[in-house]
Image (cartoon, rainbow, N blue to C red; front, top):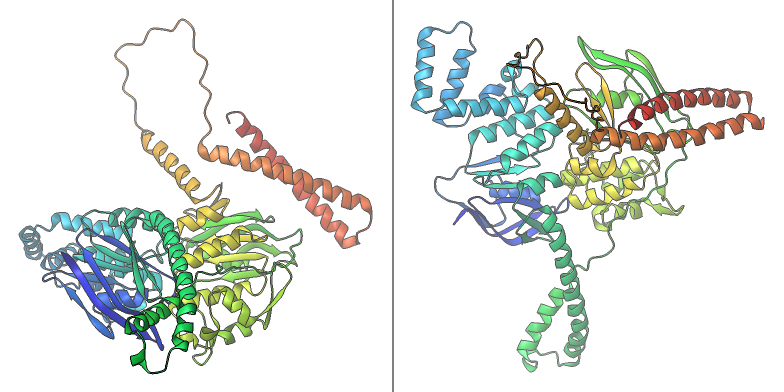
Length: 632
């Protein structure tokens, strides 16, 4: 029996039907992921099912005594409360007992009577185990200490999302409805959350674009497409396979209906106008065929293809960057010379300084010390987490024309702003829609378009996957795989990172940046190896117990076993081989330029300086390559 059911739901928004006569049910233990393109009505459907928005037609029913909790993309709180009051605001006796207990224990001036009272309440409601779970949730989400006393009105967007997530997890409802739960969470927290939500006892409905998260958590996918719901029993990988089969079948049915419609249309025109003289059954069949023929035939996918501005030999050279805010060091002595086609993933916990580093690279923030020297031909494309800034009276096409009326594509052809919008799945009818009418994902897609239209050769994408649908993400990945410039990505989407990055910059405590060769999964495997080694190592100061008896001496001492390279070291060795080959080529080219005698005085000086840096790189990387070669 369904815990939650919806019958004949319809919703019209901005003169467009999102869905009509849609039916839906959610049973105990189902973990359903709702997917679909931006603007298809996913968030609206979640809000209707959660009872926060009425449908135009139809009804939603919830079984008696079933509690439903909803996590929205933009959480709404009572702004007069602090964080602790917000999290424990649920009308739940056990939560109330925990709240009172924590309040008394954390009060240094509490009385013995108060402590006795709250401990008895904890015993009455068997709340001790629950209290441990609450503490784990708050700790994992970083909601500790002074943050609990902070008014919710003073929280950042990311903090508000974490507080809202903590609240719904602590409430332990019968049905959990989550809209983009991984947004604003760092990668370690996402991994913890997916393990928690993968419980067989949990009943869950969610919208998320995180494909690893979908694979791990969901046991059913519902696709919202052209106002209809298509169910797939399985995870994301199964959905991708079966969706392609369905679209192929639907395309064949539409083509068949259109061929039949031509014949039936000719028959209808030949008959007398009076309906009574025609065969009623055939007339009804004609209108059914006409409706089927209006179906969408799957056409060519959206394709991102823009010209990349030519990139010179010097891209960005960073030397000894240092930055701190108050007493907190967020970046300490960072140096790096960016190379052509660098593909870097920037990772670290929230607040570690990722956005600070990106803002310094683009010149929007000055370091306390150190130098960022960008080449003259470097053109930045910086996609930030800030929302699209627009005038309420602006239409979609106005946003694009502010940047360019004509766009040059990768093949040298030129397209108008309107044609370019169509590449980004904005059909002509939607191009004259007010921007305020767009969904959150559509606004993010429009924001990405504005970045790419400038033909950058150094792309910085700060959380580009937030609110974008999976179809757009797949297309964006294809574009970035073929992008010829430098690329830096900050993203909590592990699938996206694994597909695109070739090295990881990991921000560590104290402002240090670890440069790791490989993608995000490679880095996490290496990190787990390090954690295992640390756990196996005896604590400092531990004295090993003396053996009872010494073992007999061997006849011949065996040769020391050769140390095996770790996974990370093998990847580093392979990367260094490629880099050394490229550096040798670069060195030879520079020598030829210097010997040609054709350059200006400034060019000769630049080539000589670059040759010196190349030699230094060859020496340092060569030494490391020799070290690794001993045990790879």
